[in-house]
Length: 277
Image (tube, rainbow, N blue to C red; front, side, top):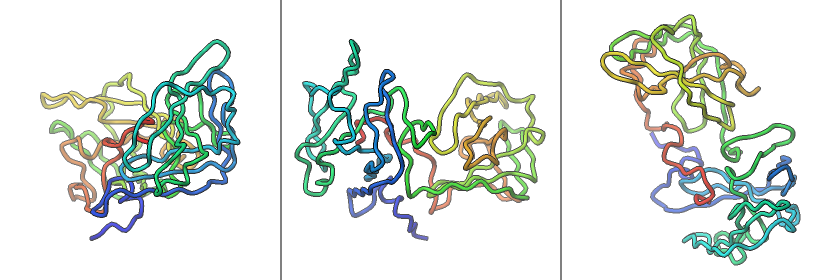
């Protein structure tokens, strides 16, 4: 079956080659460096291109350009042109190569002229309205639903039945394989060891992890949970999920999970930094 989600081709590429899409968002976006709001806009450009995560571009008029100084560095992007990089100066502090722009973008990317983007991880914080957001810009074409279910979910790790539940919450996210979140009472917690790992997701929140050592193997960070999930997916708060693809088997109503043609795994191969812009 062909996958018709437009983001499939933009994120992962297709036979027609590189694509780019941009649209103005009405959401109020701010980016903060060293306590100073350097960009503040209600008309950011959300740009998505083949094989890369969404990026916010701010109109230059919404950027405090007095804090920007042209860096002695430029980088050529085959499809967009040559990017100018900017250092950010806040008081006596300098954040090097923290922003970029295209003074003469390619014809396909002409809309990027007079816009500025920022290196996500170099900023102190990003806000959408009054909510802090993490990792990368939110994709306007990605939908996420957390739906309670009565499907029978069993998880086998290292030859052991580690989870057995008939009350999962299934998380569906555009283009990605479903994830199954289970109550702790349906999981052999005695077989799991808490990890120090922490990750953030712009759609779900901050996740903590557990590992398992079973059957002579170590399954590092194979389980995760959002103790305080974001409001859109509050149903998964406090529940645990296993990486379908890293356990021995995840059974759904007696059938072993496998990756469907129309789905894919999360963004493991997609860069998270500005070099992917």
